Image 1 (cartoon, helix red, strand yellow):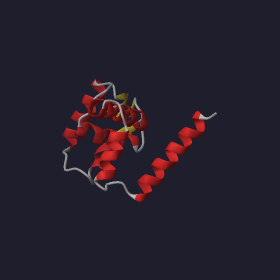
Image 2 (image 1 turned 90 degrees about the horizontal axis):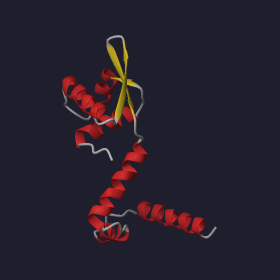
Image 3 (image 1 turned 90 degrees about the vertical axis):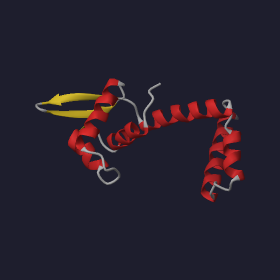
Amino acid sequence: MIELSKAEFAVMEALWQGHPAKASEVVARLSDDTQWHEKTIKTLLGRLVKKQAVSFEKQGRLYSYTPTIGREEYTLKQSKSLIQRFFSGRIAPLVSGFAKTEQLSQQDINELKAVIKEWEDQQGK
């Protein structure tokens, strides 16, 4: 599994917004949220290429970058890894912890109920 730093993840988020993207487009997307210099972002893109999280295509003097992994795929793998490491693979203690500290909104609760109902309906078939 590809491990991304917080900064690398921010660059991936910028790429997931729309790709392929030139480095200048990634810089523009990140300019509102970060104070990173253009060279920093290009260094992060290079790291992501080395990690094979991003591919590139050279177009003259410019490079066009494309993520090799989808956001949903990456976040699902990371979520499973977190749950395995901290909760022995069990989701209930994680959700319970949020519920006990009142960090679950009514919308969160409704979404969880809908997911559980959908899963139960699929298991019954």
